[in-house]
Image (cartoon, rainbow, N blue to C red):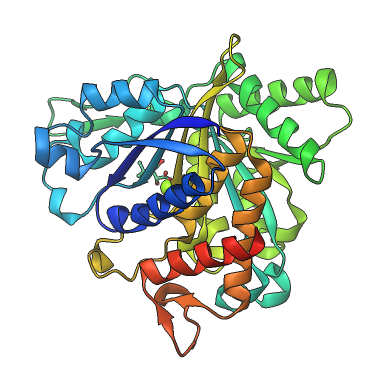
Length: 369
Ligand code: IPM
Ligand code: MG
């Protein structure tokens, strides 16, 4: 049976609750002799701050870098509102992305037919929606320098962030998008603000020339980021793969998430460069939802996005695409049966707890097997 190291970072809020469901599934996979994950646990976000005053320790960073894949649940919460900016919970997540060079963030937005009525859009607009946002994750305004607040000495201050992209950064994220499109519906929509930003002019130029050189078989269109936001809520099913920068991708992926009915449903993968020697990539998988401090500790959080993230790990890190298909089918079947957690209840009479939902998916998985 294949064996891999999984570094698990439950983090804050509902994080530990949803992560517990992954451990159940992993234990079952191992009992069945399908794949064995050696699970090591670490601390990130507020949990790491409470333990050692940083958003992630160097030791845990080392474990993350050494693992075959990292699973992270969620970071942050009001408890840490007052901590210094450098060690706020989000800094742990940003350090993982940057230090592991996870430049490609894949955020699928899939609307399960059983949940189409939970979307804020009309059913016919979202039923069967299946798009993929490919967000650049280690560049742009998130990390560009200078990044500071300076005192102008006249009672005024100036806040500065820098949006910066080099050709290679745009090319490598573009390649990820085109390759994914080839396995899907063969269409890429590239998005920037070239009407006001120089980085947008370069983005447009690099994607256009990459397309002409290496991917002429893929359909490519360009949409300005504001117009794309509008089109996402107007007619979301026109999209297949959307490729965009770090900040626009952050915003647009929240919009796309809401189209599907619940933020609690969406997984994501953050991938690094392929290492030449082993064909493997560094990778971190996490749900798009946050730590949901308002419901933390109650055992009612929806574990589906976390389970979906684990499924993405099987697909992108461990070449277990068929197993991932089975898990995704189990999720969809459980929803078809009307089983719901509170966030997607939509008037359902019985509401499952986090662990009941995990159990239901595991039970379904055994049937699908
Ligand atoms: C996300 C989150 C993060 C981001 C925060 C928590 C730093 O919103 O993953 O989308 O802005 O990238
Ligand atoms: Mg975000």
